[in-house]
Length: 321
Image (cartoon, rainbow, N blue to C red; front, side, top):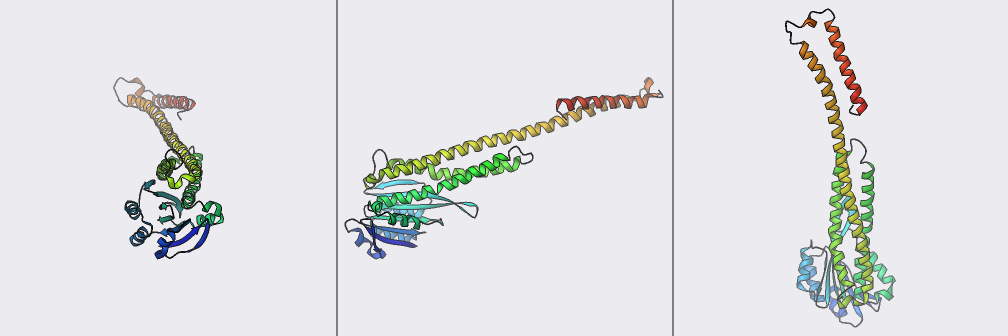
């Protein structure tokens, strides 16, 4: 679905352009066309390919979708894939933004994401001195918007992790904590898969052999690379903390099980002594004088009781009960 198709010249908006007239504006000096699509159909991509002269492999990747974040160079044009990560009704939703960048055009198509980039277009139009740099600055602005949306997700993960950590030492919550930690780890891994490949790809835009089309804006991409580096470091810190929290939680489970085992062992020892005495006196041998003794029964009960009480006292003092 077509969202916008606008022509710009020297940092100023010229007009909204019909799709059929895109190629005419692309040929003008100092003019570029910025097209935005949402959930583009194959026919729309083919039409854009004809108007902009897009590389067939890039169009195929955009049509297929579910690509790994990357930035590829095709002659004098670039093709970038970025993942959007956003919360939708409490669930983590993964979208994809494909951007085609040429000397006189920018084509962005987003899939499976609710948040658009109208704010990015408004920002660029408010800064005509930046927009005058052409399609490269628009490419930076789109990428910067995608990366900036990662920060709230990281903050949400850190907040959730802090809540779980506060409950680690609460008795009876270990199972629930482990389930929440593993669910959080799954979400963090999803974000990691969006950030890490993009971090590597953006590094090629501000150092080494920089593609000519973004040579004048590499300082801006260095800023994006710095943001991605910070996000990636935060993700690694969260993953390490989750691993530590899981180990602590499992240790707490082991400690609780050890306490239960000690209590069971203590009670088993107490009843074992009582069972031993009662078993001996219950054998009914003929030459057991205490069986016919008047005070044998109460004394035997007293002996068993005293020994059991003594064992209970010792186990209690040692912390087993």
